[in-house]
Amino acid sequence: MSDRFDERWRRLVDSARRVPAEARAARSGWVEQVARRALLARTTRSIRPREPLAWAGLVSLAAATAVAVLIWPGPVATTADALISGAGALPRAVPHAPRLPRSPAAPRPPLPSRDVAVAAVSRLPELTLELPFLPRRTETP
Image (cartoon, rainbow, N blue to C red):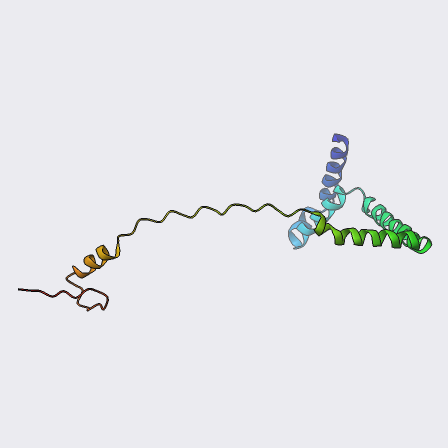
């Protein structure tokens, strides 16, 4: 790995030395040009071998599938029918999920009784409304 690194580093240095010093300041695209040369120096191959191999494998698989369907349509059709019927029977074959218990309800705070609440509301001096549900007080002498 270090030999390849040294070779790439040497290419990078050589490509940077090829540009004269006065041309560096004069041209505005000097940085992009040096970056392109550095990228070309780092890459040793331009074609990746895996991609054409993957396409060739995909084409051969598609061709084999087409040949199998054309030559043996009977077994392919029966296999497809069996798969479809098996998929249709799958919901009946799977057991139902068990019922889960209800989640516990949050505890409610204890509320005062109706009479206590009405008595507290009626004692408010700021309340000048006559509420219809309050019991009428009659003062007897």
